[in-house]
Length: 149
Image 1 (cartoon, one colour):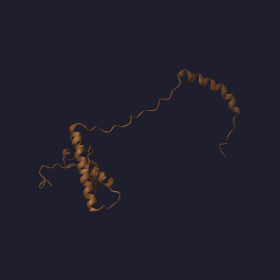
Image 2: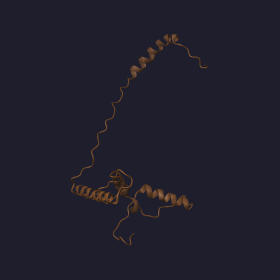
Image 3: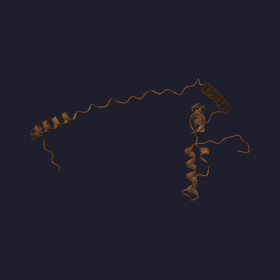
Image 4: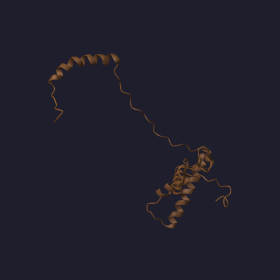
């Protein structure tokens, strides 16, 4: 690939890279093999933030966008090319907006935690224990359950 595109930089999905490495290591019987590629080849943390796709797997993102545009599994060639052209224009416009600072990340509804329960004070607990001791005499009237039944 570097022969035909010398200025290209290969970036991929870490999950799928690890999955492929694990599959190959099992195939060749090498369960604990050190990575041969430097982290700069697969680590996307340092990639510039002014990109349209904010995920490390742009191809999967593109395929998902492409699949949502087709109501049928096998579209005509004309429909496919028109859809790819439109997606390309949308992505170029979105990238331009991100670079210009016009695009903002999506806003999410603020998560509100439920109100914490009101817990009794220690004095209330001590008082309830003494009152439950006095009420335990009235528990003799409760129905007894046979544990063997």
